[in-house]
Image 1: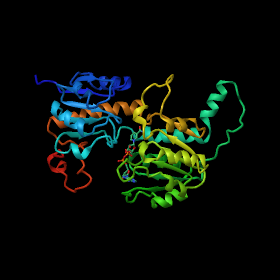
Image 2 (image 1 turned 60 degrees about the horizontal axis):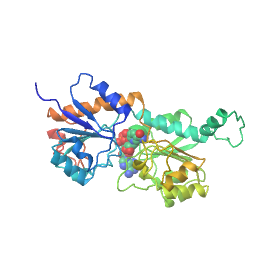
Image 3 (image 1 turned 90 degrees about the vertical axis):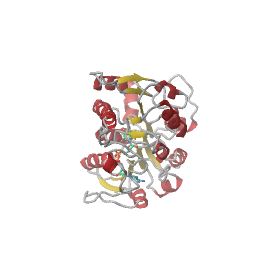
Image 4 (image 1 turned 135 degrees about the vertical axis):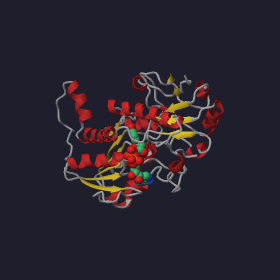
Length: 347
Ligand code: NAD
C-alpha cells in the first residue's frame, strides 16, 4: 500500500482539529496538528510531511517558502479563501498553493448583517444592561434599515449574498466592483459615488496591494455623516487610525469590524487578564459605536465541514495529478492562459 500523504496543520484550533478529524475518519491522510503558526522557526515541525495546511494569519513569506521547499513540502493548502498572507509571486515555480475559494459565503454575509443589526440597534449594550437588571432605554435609539442605501464593495460570492439579505430588509443597494458582474441587476457606481451616497458601506473584496487602506482619511471625508462601516473582508482595507479620527469627528457613526489590520498579533487568542499593548485596537474597542469580532464570520458548522472536505479534495487533486481546480498563482488572474487551464496545474 502506498504511503499515506502527510499533512501538517498549523495554527490549528480545537474546532479545526474536530472538523478535519471528522473529514479524515477513514484515516486516509496522516495528519499532525500544531497550535503554533507556521513561521521560519516552526517549518521544521513539517519535516517528513508532503503538505502544510495553514490559515489566514500564517505569514507565508519568502523565507518560509524557501524553508518549506528545502523541507520537501510540495503543497501549501490554505484552509481559507483569501491569500494575501502568501507571497504568491515568490511561490510561483517553487511550491504549489491551493485554497478553499468558497466554504460558506452565507456564514460571512450573515455575520456582516448580524454585526450591523447589533450595532445600529445597540444589542451589545442592551445585552449587558439587562443582565444587570438595568431596563432603561436611554441611549439605545437605533434607526430603520428599510429605505437606507447600502454600498457593497466587491460583488463576488459573499457580497452578492449580503446584497440579497439587504434587499430583504428593503434597503437600496449600490455596489462597486473592479470587475462588475454583467446582467446581475446590481446598480454599479464608481467608488467615489458609493462613498458619497451610502448610509452603510460593507467591504467584500479581497485585499490587494492596490486597495490597501481604501478606507482612509480622504475617502472617509467623502462619506455621509453617520456612515456605518462594516468590514468582514481583510483588516488592511481600512486605515484604522483614520477610522478612529473619523469616529472622533462624528463622521463615522459606527464601525463593525470582524477583521483588523494588526489582527495577527491578537486574534484567535485569549488575552483576557493581559494588558494588550495595541493602542489602536484598544482605542477602537473602547468606543461604544465600534463592534469587534475576532475574524469569526466564517465560523459555522457548515463552513468548517466544507473547509475540511475541500482541503482534502484539493490535496487529492494535487497528488493524483488531476486538474487542481483550486490552485492559485500570481499568473492566474493576469494571463489568459495560465498553465492550469490546459495542464491542470499552474506550473
Ligand atoms: P470572491 O472572489 O467571490 O469575490 C470578490 C469580489 O471582489 C469579486 O467580484 C472581485 O471582482 C472583487 N474585487 C477584486 N478586487 C477588487 C477591488 N480592488 N475593488 C473592488 N472589488 C474587487 O470572494 P468572496 O468569497 O466573496 O470573499 C470576499 C472576501 O471576504 C475574501 O477576499 C476574504 O478576504 C473575505 N473573507 C472573510 C472571511 C471572514 O471570516 N471574515 C471569510 C471568508 C472570506
